[in-house]
Length: 121
Image 1: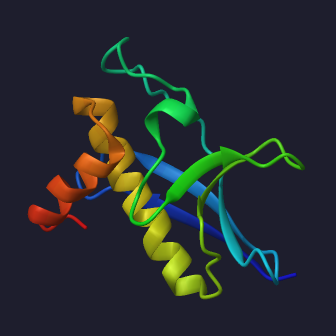
Image 2: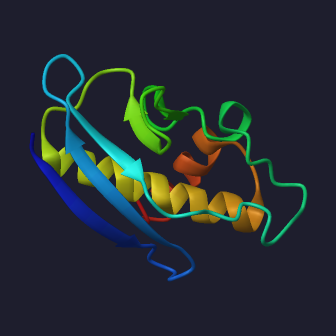
């Protein structure tokens, strides 16, 4: 089984995330398990930390769910990712969107568009 520890710091330096990138092979592909604790309510108590409500869509159905066989949440997509470089980019985009969400709120899908327009993603 192939794996990689990865660290991502958002471009505004507001969030550092540790990942365990794990290749689960066919049919699941790579997963980016989030090893860091994230305080979604650090800026506002109004921010939800419920994965189903806040972190649903990021570019064609990317989700953050709890893996039923592990205690770690992971960043995933509806379609499997078989390329580690693509998984790194998806995890990085997820971090940028999460940092914006913590500071400003909003839906992940809308945040993605804003950050793409600003050239962050």
